[in-house]
Image 1 (tube, one colour):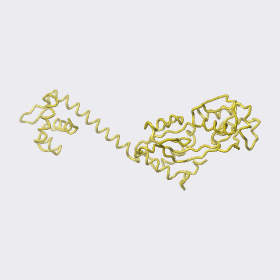
Image 2 (image 1 turned 180 degrees about the vertical axis):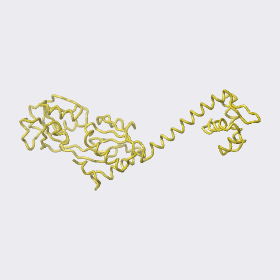
Image 3 (image 1 turned 30 degrees about the vertical axis):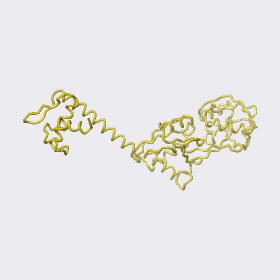
Length: 300
């Protein structure tokens, strides 16, 4: 049985006459009569009574018509919903992003994108980098604001280069320094991200290159919380420069080579983006800091 068969039943139920129903459907009367006979044969029940006045649903027909209305209605809603989601201007984009970008890059980026696509719907997922890549691989997210550039079948658009700084509480012995090296942290309580997070791997690589082993006092998977712990005098930390000072901490540039992270937009290169996600990416490419667009402030 096809959806057109169900629509034929509904037309008969509405018009109660083969002539009127066939005219409404744009088919011949014999075609509609054969449709009704075929559906009744498939369901194993007589659905309409025929007489000189036309055709009339019997109790079994009423049940069939109710089901036909539900099935065709659900199908029509599905088509409408998908059409809306696939519209480049008003469809849905599924964007995942790092926790550390929740109050910095993400609001500015979304503000600029909305200037170009005000009807676009954006579903946001805030999570660690390893969960982001899992969700992009599974199709739960289409685009990801993350760092560093992921290995594997991903394309990448670099958006923001962030210097890493040492943060210390007010009054700390290093607070007046204009620059600091990792060796200066000897004997200090260190606050950082737990192992397994991308940012922790970056910090660990910096310490390893400097042949310094930090004394880790606290681990928490949120850079804003780390900054708050340092502000409360519970240790020192290395964070992206935008986080310095939020709770009174003092940011000190590092002399260590490679003390920076690159943030960018990643997506799977081995499958096409949906129309709305492709539109989102095109907008970001046009207004990113590498262009002459209005969003050069992303680089700060």
